[in-house]
Length: 260
Ligand code: ADP
Image 1 (cartoon, helix red, strand yellow):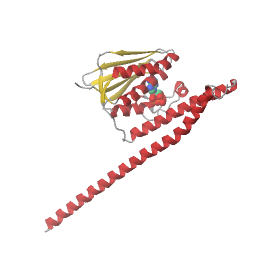
Image 2 (tube, rainbow, N blue to C red):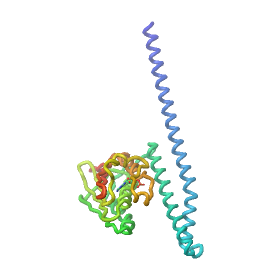
Image 3 (cartoon, rainbow, N blue to C red):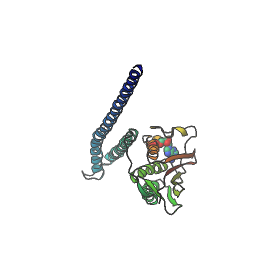
Image 4 (spheres, protein in one colour):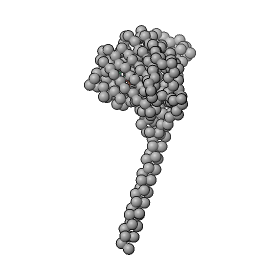
């Protein structure tokens, strides 16, 4: 009889443990859903007035509301550029928070990375040329199909390219694509300011930015690389960096190769 009692007690304990686990899981899911809702609301609440601000600043800038006087031109420009920058920062914070909540899902397909890269290079060409930088692309293997999410890959590479252009004062930015037995690799190489070896472990930390006069000038949130790293791991790949201060940096992303 004692055996039976003991067994019944053990069963009851196991069941109550399972129940507690289920409750905890449900609570965590509810908390996550609340966080995602909160982010959606905040994003909307912040972005709507900002769109109005930048929209009206654009109208003023384009002379749609009458010609601007000379002293008015500079402040209007400042409103436009700062408004845009604030929008980008909000996008970064939201993007990071969404990835951090673990709610993000990916849709994998076979993506020809050469095409994606050449679109991104075209997109970045204007800002590179404006700074007098040469921006080029080399495709080492003819077919580089990745099993990946095309939108996420674009966000990831775009962040690296925009950093390369931002943190390079002279010289060039090169994008190289090649295939390995299980990976497709994308390298973004620049001849920019580089990263101090001591600071290297921190580059992936959210909000980290180097102490450098150029960085203060270009602004930003310090979220780009932490988002990039999370995206790479979400896509089943990884990201690495090699850098020499004053000489340049090379970021390499590896993504799963599409088979067959
Ligand atoms: P942000 O670009 O908004 O500052 P990131 O997370 O993309 O944020 O980058 C974090 C920091 O890493 C930058 O502020 C800069 O100090 C350093 N960094 C990133 N990319 C480069 C690069 N290509 N060359 C030199 N430093 C870089």
